[in-house]
Image 1 (spheres, rainbow over the protein chains, first blue to last red):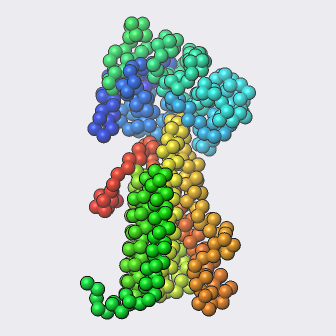
Image 2 (image 1 turned 30 degrees about the vertical axis):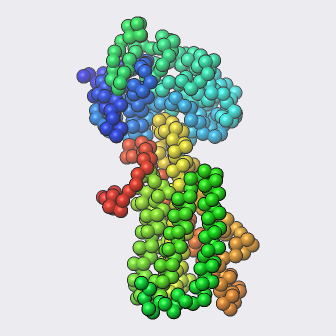
Image 3 (image 1 turned 180 degrees about the vertical axis):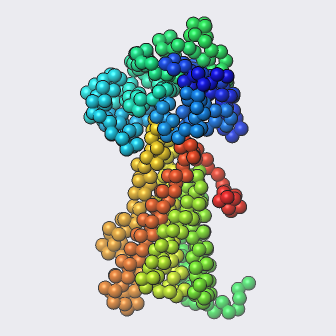
Length: 226
Length: 279
């Protein structure tokens, strides 16, 4: 397998918990700038696959390559600034929007220019929200903060785990539009797990249908989702 | 069969009075158990078990204390070490599921207690006699255990209820220790509440038994107060050192070498499996 040509690639990736295999020998590759969406039924192992891609869980077998380098040879903390994830649940920390957006650099002892925070907030549709308490935000606004919190580290690969799953329909539409705009206007590589076909249609370059821990089919959206 | 030499002691009227006092204390404890039952708190087993166990253990210690006080001084180190081991064994149950909870407990309680006991021995605040060293050392170890239990319990609940937030931070390159720093601080703070509150109210609300006993025994009240402060200072220091050590270690052991937050899986370790885990 030509893993070295891909931005991100997996090699026979497996993951099991207490003897139960959740990811069963996955080989996939994502090219630079490509948006790959992963669809499939609940419990298929899609979220676990994303966790493995940024090494939040340890593969029981196989590995992941970033720019052709086995990610086990990289410092995990540095790796996750290169492959950043937006979780399903925003899981923000009590405090202001600005504090949450800048939390990663701050906890790494780095500073963030105020102008960069303002521009990021504008990009996710939260201009002027800097000093608002996150406890007072709607579900959609909180998810926008979570997206900005990941974008602030400027990852080369963006992993998105069903970012609209826990939102009401109106907020879902807002976040979908935001993601479509974010992914269409950047050359960032992205892997998006979603249930939503409309979301796939808007952003996907390629789709993987994931069933029972395996790649069932993959290709252009019109083929896989037909 | 009661040994003949103990028979006169058992007929001592003081013992009968003691039994009546035990009955009164037990009745009060029974009220707590009853309330737990009525409110469906499901704590009767733990509360009742610890109450009965404490009674048996303290009686056994009462019967043995004469023998204990007659052992040569160097053996008091063995007794205190055994106390630390047992305290850690009990304390680690509060953090069941926390990775390496026994190792954390034995290190934290051992370090916190040992530093304080050795320093105060060197300063002459604890007499180097078994009669003094074992009870005072036991008191310090017991308080270190309490702090360790509270720190483990709080850390476990902090991590379990904030797992999503911690992993969200890990997923964007926040170093593990920084991701849990606030939760570690919270564990330290919560574990030191009893010690800090006791210090704050010392002499105003909380009049410790040792000081009262010394004054009733004819000691200079100011000296009794000074010595009680020394004891409280030892408890404070042992608690602080223990809590800091506990939090430092659990914060580290909570993560794998690849900066992944471990799953906290509850188990029922045996002495053997715990010893194996040290390898």
